[in-house]
Image (cartoon, rainbow, N blue to C red; front, side, top):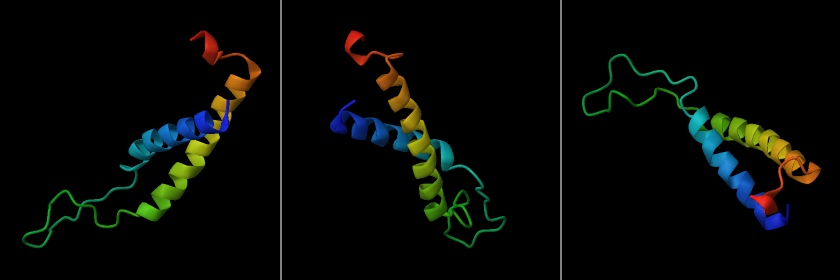
Length: 78
């Protein structure tokens, strides 16, 4: 796996992981102020979610890299 393909795989894994992590720990405000969205979270903790996403995507990328470099998955034959 080259540098460019490795980066592309990581970016794809990061985005998919982000969409899986975003709903974690979301609490809605029970009585929002007038004009506020009822579905808006009280404390979204985006920084924590980006950090968790980066770590999980990194671990997944290491797994994909190991599979590709070991020859279990041969990208050229796909």
